[in-house]
Length: 401
Ligand SMILES: Cc1cc2nc3c(=O)[nH]c(=O)nc-3n(C[C@H](O)[C@H](O)[C@H](O)COP(=O)(O)OP(=O)(O)OC[C@H]3O[C@@H](n4cnc5c(N)ncnc54)[C@H](O)[C@@H]3O)c2cc1C
Image (cartoon, rainbow, N blue to C red; front, side, top):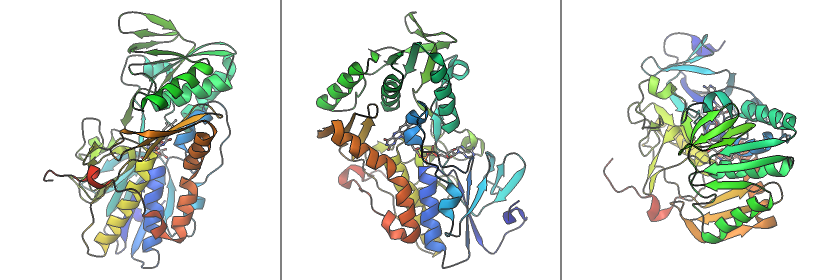
């Protein structure tokens, strides 16, 4: 039980951070590092499990590759932030409370909502019941178990976006006994420049992945997927990577959300309907000059740091500053021995330059491994986390907010 369960307002300002993923951890470490010596602020982090989920490596988990044991409570040690293990089951934005595992209630003065997103298995009938996903560590482990037991047959990866490409490549490399089919509306690497796109397609070909672009899955059956037009493709296992959805908790709490359920924020990352709530990472709809940000770790971590800076400023009686972020790369693994890195403009459109092969593998691994040491550095020196590309003219929001 937590001391915050006491009714009534405490003298201490209670900041509750929901979700210890890439964005939530950035917010927690950054904020705790800034308020630790000042006192008067209690930071509490709630997450479903103690182990940090390296979402960017879930395709590795899904193919049975062991990952480092990264402990959220251990990372928070010495920061003054508390850790509460539990599943958030409701948010009451009026009472400013959060229900954990249906039986605990935590109060907050400021809430940071960082619950991320999951694969959108509600998109077509049957996906929820019959498809595997990379929604979380547990789901990826279930898929690993399934693939290890198959011994042969066909795996259909539905969704030709980057998660689909990385998953299909990894499965084909780790399980040469399986036929891997990658299905999707767009060509793999569609958002990349022609050279990078061709590289992705050649790598998938080399790994034996059969690609079907222009295919729209309309139904998932226990042993097949059905395409628009009526064709059916036999599948021993279906992996659903097409689209993401967010938790319905924010909408149920009456927070203003967009059509995908993400919390709509102002320039400082506060909910437009409830300014004591900050939304970050994949769960937030954050507008930049180029449009609403899409879910990435490269953008998610800066949103966490910025929310922490905004909260710190507000607590000091200052105005928070507007958040600005410009993309700079799209690193994509193609199994363990190959990769491509597409460098981008701040609006995520592809530049001409890209890396391929071993250099790209090293780059991708450096990027994927970087969040944990970054939190470690921020713990000691919060200012070290406050650098990211602001995106210049690409991110300037012109219309009145
Ligand atoms: C296979 C794969 C590869 C990727 N590769 C890249 C890449 O190369 N570069 C990149 O920038 N992005 C990549 N991404 C996207 C990136 O992982 C996400 O954008 C990022 O994880 C978003 O961070 P987040 O903190 O918002 O959410 P998450 O990292 O998903 O964290 C959310 C946390 O909240 C917890 N949680 C959720 N609901 C509840 C609840 N009700 N109660 C308690 N806890 C809860 C979750 O368990 C999790 O710990 C990849 C994604 C996948 C699936």
